[in-house]
Image (cartoon, rainbow, N blue to C red; front, side, top):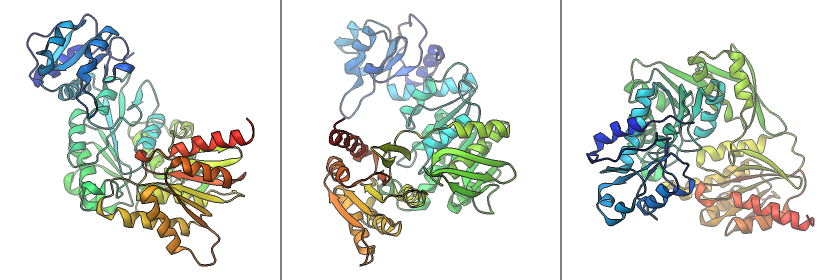
Length: 473
């Protein structure tokens, strides 16, 4: 059960010009919800305006379904519908701001210690590794799914169980200033930046600008800052911003204070490595890039005093999050489902996994779609993916959509004239599935990767249906 925190909401709302005549809640509030379809009894329904629908349209239904109350704007409360409300209304100028202030008040009054996690890649995986390595629920709890923005983070905070003492919260951003607002809500005691890459280039002019935006996570002077050793820009800017901070560098190089070596992949690409001065770790996660995520998690767990044996057990218990280097086998064909998101850095890591997964007796294929939010350099960055696919000795490239055509161009340009590799362009994920269902054989390995907006996981779903139909199942 989540904490009953209606008192905190009243305190927070008072800073948001709350109406003095607030109806008293009939029972303690049990967290918040913004989707009336997912509402649980006792939750506060928060009416947020949206691009498609305004949450105020669902206030009456939410109260009838058992909401403990509704957080609404003055403008809506002044209308006729408010008179029909079958429950208490908390009336504010800005429901989103009130939600955020409620979460901030909850963090402050409960004494929950916060670990903030950001980065161009690996946020969700690192969050899950930190939670498990540091002891797990109910004492250590992570943000829900990928709830890492100005709406999702406060919802995650308000859903923390009463027993929670450490909250591990993703903090995402696509523009400057977003993380600053998140750390106002939940100031991190420990700040983790997993990686620095060229995601969101349409909103930034340089990698240094992206680094500066990520480093908004240290604005409240965390006691520990965990950084990847292979991102010197982050290290330089972090030392400028927090000259006296405790910085800990993680990675494979000698410059790392927390270092791994002897990295190996098993038959399914799952990674094993040695941590200098400590011992071996065998992850159930695929890809050498997860070594850095695990090292950051070890740093956090050790900061909180977790014994090494418990850290190892926690790390080894973590399974792949859906659509993030998720290993699947369908009709004898092996898939790496990495369709949740994509950018140039994560694409390179995924291609390394495709190329270096040992003991694959069949062929290797890449089904790839657009990497979104890359700005003016998008076409060239997609073309380079094609070059990397050629270097990774991919037997088949299936490029989806207009930006996929740029990837196909890059691979064709990079292929040797004697290469037997095939390059095919298709319109969408469904067409890719049909082609793959005819091409793939047992023991082939297929990587599926694109940005979330492409929904390329549909290729795997349709592939499974087509092969089942072919086999008469």
